[in-house]
Amino acid sequence: MKNIYFILISFLMIVSCGENKKNKTVDQIIETNNLDLIRQKKSEIIATQEAFNLELKKINDKIKVLDTSKKVPLITTIISKQENYNHYLELQGNVTTKQMLVVYPEFSGILVKVFVKEGQKVNKGEILAKIDDGGLGQQLAQLEVQSSLSKTTFERQKKLWEQKIGSEIQYLQAKTAYEAQQKAVGQLKQQLEKTIVKAPFSGIIDDVITDQGSVVGAGQSPLLRIVNLNNMYIETEIPEKYIATITKNKDVEAEFPVLGKTLQTKIYQTSNFINPANRTFKAEINLPNKNHEIKPNLTAKVKINDYTNKNAILIPQSIISEDGNGNQYIYIVKNKNNKNQGVAQRVIIETGYLQGDVIEITKGLSVGDEIIDEGARSIREGQTVKIINQ
Image (tube, rainbow, N blue to C red; front, top):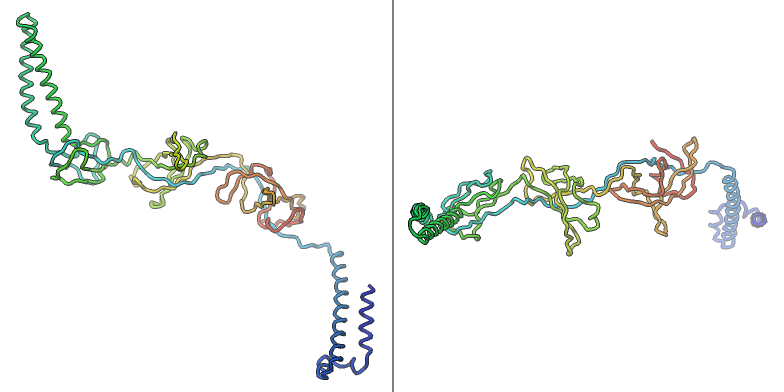
């Protein structure tokens, strides 16, 4: 108060310096080019300004005391509730099949005939191609004639021996000769069987690799590729930390971006071996393929259900904050009145699995808590807030 009086007295003293000075405007004083007069006018203005500022501050302070209406932050809230929560591990997989095979010949010679064409369906055991036998057929015919003769000789010698006619050595010689002929015929038939290429399983001829008339080598020349599109699966590699949660019969969502197709399936089996190079284990996922749209080596995105909680409390991850001690916290509204106003209370929480922007709360929240959503980042503990939920 003393400061105000002092400023006012100073101001009156300056003003009383003369009637001519008092009545002159700022522009008139500046035009005089009198330094003393200009400085006096500056002091007058400063004194007046300071006096007004002090009075204005007193008025504002009193308004703050008397004004009970405060600016309350506006927020939106969500009510915590129990939900069924399924967490999915997202991985990339590759389509493959155990029945995709390149067929090689077991006999060397000229490929005299190919009985199938690309895209043709074949059954297991169906003849696919024929290789020239190189005269083995004629040799077999000769051996069969000799075998027939040895058989007749053996049967007659056997009857004589049963009648105690002739010697035992004659009987045994006839028997041995007949058995040797039978074995020789059987071996030659096996060799001839190798000149006929048959389907190892039912499927589709994907590619005819070697043309008819070409010379092929046993185990060296690829003839055809056969694929069974019915018996297919997705193979994916899973980090070892999921070995306890990702097991046989877990639900899987398989997406094929190229086809624009998504299938619901299950894990058929998991590997019992962990790859030491990348610390992963393999999983095979069933793949229904009735329309044969899905092909081997097609890329698939798989989502494997590794965790389920039927009574989970879920909130957006974006509203969670963290203090200097590493504690995660959110704000809830307490003591809400009939004007939708309440007090913000900070709650320390513990979290579980995250899926997108939704995270599971394992500790700190109860069903029915009103959680601050929009505006959570701009409030503080104990602050009055107003809820404007639509």
